[in-house]
Image 1 (cartoon, helix red, strand yellow):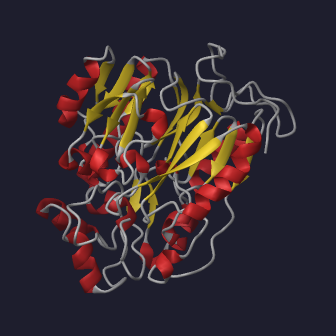
Image 2 (cartoon, one colour; image 1 turned 45 degrees about the vertical axis):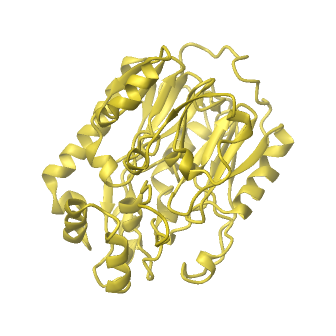
Image 3 (cartoon, helix red, strand yellow; image 1 turned 90 degrees about the vertical axis):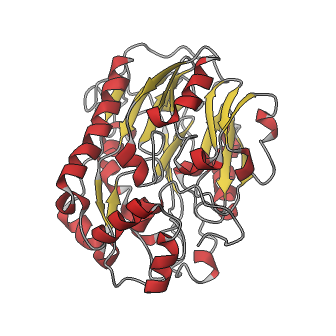
Length: 391
């Protein structure tokens, strides 16, 4: 739960993670042949291979490029999330813990959550589901307008839904279950047990696009089985994509105690160090779920930041950057969770017009997409996407 001594939390994914409230409901929710070039030094091919084509067999070479240089390098290929969610049954956990979690939310949103307990969103609120899907489709249109190739995970199977049991399931925020650093694809390890199945709909993409490509593919070791109310679920290792920001050979990993852990960051350092990467842990206040709820890299030298959420201030590598400060209220509503398409185009919600106007003053064009439903579930543009190719 939110520390009572703290102000209202940034809630990226609270409702998403409500889809996986555990029994305690206590929390909100090697190497390939190529090495990573320095930021801005590579000239990639201009035409990415179409999805599902030009990939060869599992044993053959592929023209598919898998590489992430930074958070703001030109976006070439992106995965946009699906919109599937079923909240836990009402009798999962105690009423006291449920009330504690709901108390941090606006009344209107609280009532929606209560209506959705134990029910699939698409069945319970079909019109709202259509709006949610329309948001993701509108984002896809913006990507394609700027020449970005868009892939989508498959839908959950009935077996996968049933495996969620009383705790429900989620296939709605593709950022957290896996991520890409350089040419290394990493399956993460999610703290909430129900979310550990969220990577499965992306496995088809891995099989078609990642396995044949000139990249590495690794997975974090499975965590020990431990309730979240015992030692906060244990050390893991847990590492979630929302906590991982890539800046050339420097990787920032957020740690608020709610998602990624120190052990997860140590594991990532062990994997990435042979490729010349440095992993830096960024300590967050415990009312922040992920690092991208506090920091958004817009382009080289420009950051959108909720400074009050960073226990040690802005990381040293970003100290000299121009800052667009974000208020706690804006951070709660995911004001830092916009998404650069490249160093001259940035995507955010029209609710953050103030932030968008500030971004434009630095010569960066802003594309606005209404993302109200997605944000009500605790995730905006970065949460709803995962990058396969940025350079």
